[in-house]
Image 1 (spheres, helix red, strand yellow):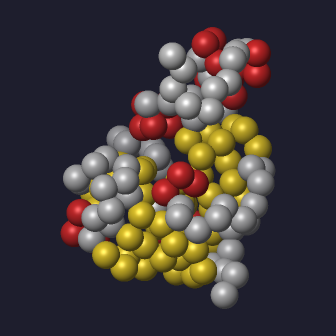
Image 2 (cartoon, rainbow, N blue to C red; image 1 turned 60 degrees about the vertical axis):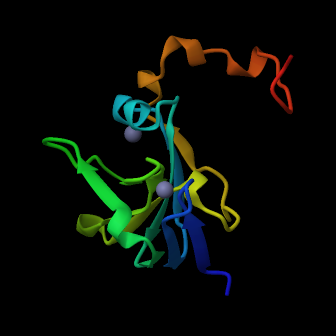
Length: 135
Ligand SMILES: [Zn+2]
Ligand SMILES: [Zn+2]
């Protein structure tokens, strides 16, 4: 079935399944996502009215809620990988794109909070690309 998606964390302790459809896919450049990913942006898919099921390792899932905000992230207690989270307020499951093992079925919708991007990211299209670690 096309509306079933599956994913896991890096160490493999945790596996999940989502039944539902993705409506949007945001690359969020806010400073909280920079801290939470250690990188330029979060990459999150949003699936309203969908069902998230932990098929393995739910006891290893931890959730951090940032003070005085809706910002929340789940992660594996063993390897730290970002994991899906159900936002009860919006009846929406938020899925980090990199956690999916099944193909990401939609293109990114938009970049958001781009004014928070660090200056090192200003000209990424111009830097060299390699398929492997360069010598
Ligand atoms: Zn893990
Ligand atoms: Zn963000």
